[in-house]
Length: 370
Ligand code: TYM
Image 1: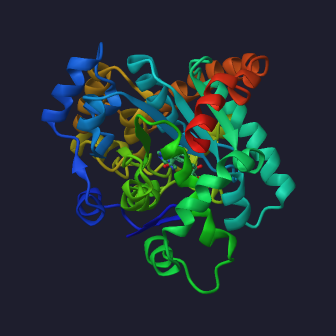
Image 2: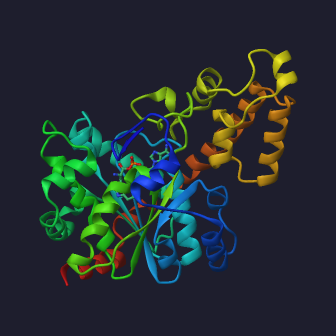
């Protein structure tokens, strides 16, 4: 297993990650404190898809804002949007500000794409994020290359506190890496300092190295340590190892994919926990624990616990065949994306509200330049 913000290799062992990264698990105790603060616990919490945290309890007992982001290396896939939907839910429940960083600089530095390509991906990705429906008065989306003037002073202060050896070790960098990526982590840490309140970061666990560093230096700079709530990776279509990858299209379904392509991909590539023949399947039943179609329903596409349970039981008993399970998933994804695209079309009219949210930009500048 190898996990950095730029690469996830092998089977992800979440228990090992908790130990290695020094995280706390989302246990029933913290879920109980959560439950007291919200109307209904989100299914991503109940199912422990958001499985680990740092100082979540501190946030729940104090005032906090939210920070998350996207690196525009291509079209977004259905894994990328999970932390965004969860962040939106947190925003609704806690009526708080959300800052969304678009790290176009990062992706230009780590990918082979041209600057123009990255710029286009950023515009498309911003529309995808706008379609999710964050509160327009409380959300600010910014591109690094555009907002650099405002974040640079703080990035410098951060950079001066971290040496090359630390960056090399934490991010697994080698001498052959370009020099841009050595400085970049200071840019992704800046939004953890946008407000004087606690900062809570919902993301998948691959982003953790940034936050470990931020927590090391925050107090030295006179700020609070950021708090995290970490999600698991929606597994790749072809099996439970690694994460979905934009550069390997058979591992993912993208937000801009049409129904025919979704159907073909799932029929052809979705790893199945079923038996080799119908007779054997009816006799022995399938294994939902390794079946990617079931796992995708569990992770995101079937919110209803009772319906999910029925699917699981029927699959285990052999009543439900692999093809039928795949059909259930395809129908869910197609419906979800149909609705998503309607929202995306509407978002074209108001995406600027997020990009030029004067109130939040003002708040951020005041904290940075004070
Ligand atoms: P990026 O664009 O790689 O990923 C965007 C968000 O999606 C999460 N993610 C996944 N979640 C579930 N299943 C998957 N298979 C999956 N793959 C990726 C990522 O953890 C992330 O939350 N450097 C960042 C951009 C960024 C950021 C942030 C992300 C800047 N500031 C603050 C989170 C929080 C990036 O390239 O993310």
